[in-house]
Image (cartoon, rainbow, N blue to C red; front, side):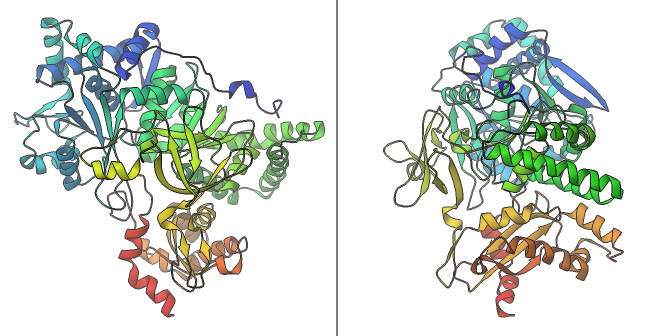
Length: 619
């Protein structure tokens, strides 16, 4: 196995990389140690612009001093309403360096949500990306008496704006330069006064079952977790990473910004969420962390490209991936890969598989990391057949991200791995619920002591809401959310996520919600992959005029039925899906049916489409 990929490149490190007991302390220590080295890159107007640690420090100092000039006090909250970009990181680090609390707001949130999150967090300064986000803030600012200033990153189109409460980020930096000259040591004193036990960041849950809850994380918890990450996933200053998931989500905040801050790995920011496939080919990250939706999209792109290839190319791929799968089977069984198979795999990579990796943009990757949602075991096996170990991690906002992780030398598709060495994980003996305990567990929910008491018991165990199993090696497997387990009218317990993951392995399915609790059989609501289904329809001369007519086309209905039939073959008859319907509305993150991370909200979808669901049982 080690001859197929270098395990020494994947093994995590345990020593402390950068000193500091708060996030700003680590940042300023990193600046002193890495000053002229490049830390971040961002594409502006088609050109990649580099930011050294020194340049980052200058901007953070100016923004931090700008906040002080506005009267921003220690422990006050500043919120950031923006897509993922370098400005987000600069403002986050400036808020923390000034002793404040940093809160992120999803850029897809509506004005009413911006109001609630700003109100709940007692936000006094609100950073917004552009005029679109500013409009939301202006719509609700009359209901936010604590809000002092709104700072805009991009003032294009706002040059004639005359509003005393609104300033541009460049203007804030200018205020900071002047304030810093008059008070040269105040920001450093704020950094030194920051204590490990202080509240550092708020991360609001997506609110699938009610209003979002603000998870509180201290500096101590963040530093402890980010050091723990380095015992789980290998990363250092030579690595190139891609930053594209929302920074207000715990996955990118911890696994992207803070982990790279700690290890020195370079952060490359995509232009926007739509350019991820193009940007990943330009960046060619050496360590690539993404959610299953991204890995599924890459896989489906390869499958669609393959359909357009010549017969010879298709045959070459079939042979090469077959060799890769035989290697993957040996690796997963922890068996020695025979010399002849190694040679075939080497040839398969040279002729075919390396080109597939380049098509995706993962040809330089040492390994891949997936998390934030369940992933199909077949997808993990496919990437392994390309020669890339895919390591699944599991955690949640309340555990400060990853709490378990699959080791590179013991990959088990379908498993989330054993407990990370920096926390404890066990199953509740009565319910099978996964419990986590450790310094990485959050401080509690802001303004919600009752909810905090429900989440963390008297012994310090966090009740995650995930139901799981553990094998003899200590590897955990998520079976479902406690509230999502289906018990059919016949009394059969069914885990919907297993069926949903199999369906999402299809290039034509983006998401799926299986329904059947207290019902005679299972049905499913499916959100199609628009791009791939449109391509299918065009190739098959299927007429359609818009998204809704596409979903209603008989050929598309038959296409999805074939995908359901494929999945049903893997399950017992009582677990098979009998009927389905396709969502005929093109959903975006602004729609109530989707979380900001583009997952269907199960309960809301069931409620909103209850008539269509009932019709599938009446028919």
